[in-house]
Image (cartoon, rainbow, N blue to C red; front, top):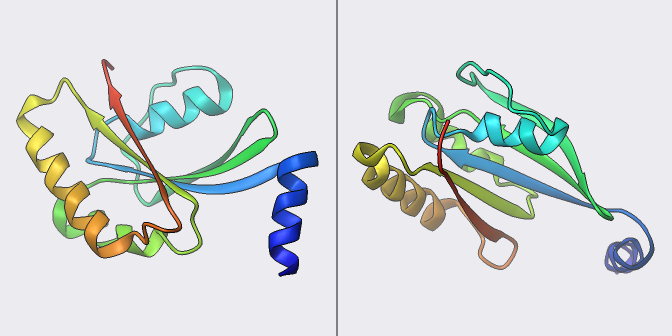
Length: 132
């Protein structure tokens, strides 16, 4: 009960903190989007091994964004479900220029969405990257 009042108070008068997981296939642009949001610049990036965590503030909301690597069906993707504990949202990034893998991106999203996300706790945001 106290936690609910604290969250309401923070929403009305202070900063609210939200944990968000960013997923997508490898090379979809997750890290590029994260750092564009975090520092306002597009950086040259390398494939994410593991994950990156950054705080991004928008108005009175502080988003703690976990950018999770998307390498291979046998590497990092099976671990995605472990990142949903205690999260408030999901950003799923799809590279719209990679037409050969859009079907795979949809399949991975559907698979992990059905097995890992509690729809009552998470909000879904889908981003499409228009170019690199």
